[in-house]
Amino acid sequence: MSEDTQTPEATDQADQGPQLRLLTQYIKDLSFENPNAPASLQAGQTPAIEMEIGVGVQSAQEDIYEVTLSISIKATRENATVFLLELVYCGLFAVQGIPEDNLGPVLHIECTRLLFPFARRIVSDLTQDGGFPALPLELIDFAAVYRAGLEQRAAQEGAQQANGDGTGDDATGNA
Image 1: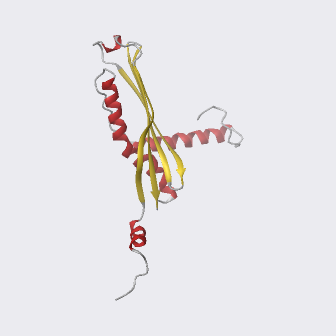
Image 2: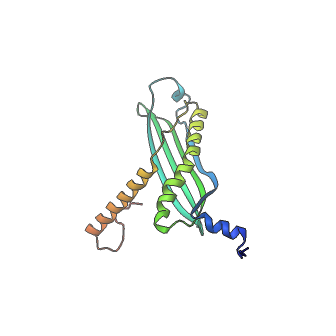
Image 3: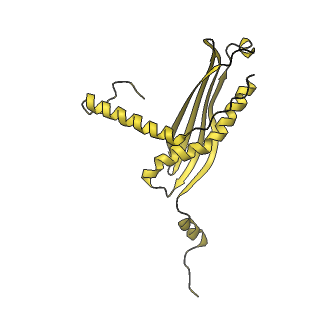
């Protein structure tokens, strides 16, 4: 019989490989405005919906990241605002054993995919609680959103290098 000097816990951790755990999720900011109520609640033409989605990642502490999903929705009818909704929904994720070059896609794509169903439910419930039909958000391809962000940053860096002196100053005011 052979002796194993490692504890079972140490063996389990070594065998697990890369790990991604959702520690908690929460609403960081939420706003719903119904500026023209009760007139905006009257039946009429279906409002036009404009939606913006944003994803942000920030290190909270070693191996723990806050992933932020921002959703902004503006509904208008005949140039009048029907409602405005802004949601910032976050999750804290523990990440271990994931190579540095894969960390960006994991945080921006996979973590956001985990948060989206909960943010989607909040948007649906909030529009319904505001007196409107529930607004079910379509599924979002967060991989495409991530790729578009990378392409936009690369284009901005290329334009800065072509136009500037390479000091890294952003004279255009882009954030």
